[in-house]
Length: 112
Image (cartoon, rainbow, N blue to C red):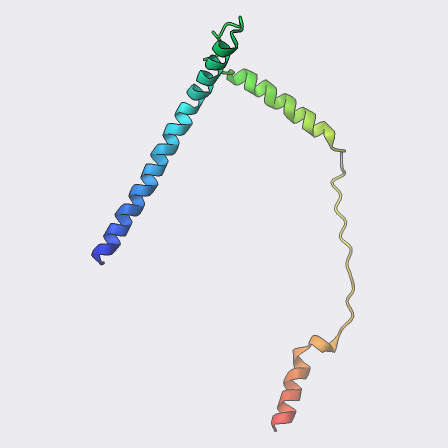
């Protein structure tokens, strides 16, 4: 292999690894940034809302209850349909226009 191939491979792996590290950093710190935004908003508006729950997240049980409610809501929007599939067989008439036999015979007759 050429030395430029090694260089391209190393640069490519470095770029991919750096992108993965950046994405990991963004996704792990995104909840902290969002709660920081809420804390700043509450302080700016000077509301008397305690921000004790700004750092807390919804538990797994609450997420499951919300997901179940959404699923039930969307499943009731559609009508119940029967699971009967009907396949109708269509009869096609024979057409010699697309038959290869006639073109081969015509070719042989013209060349002989």
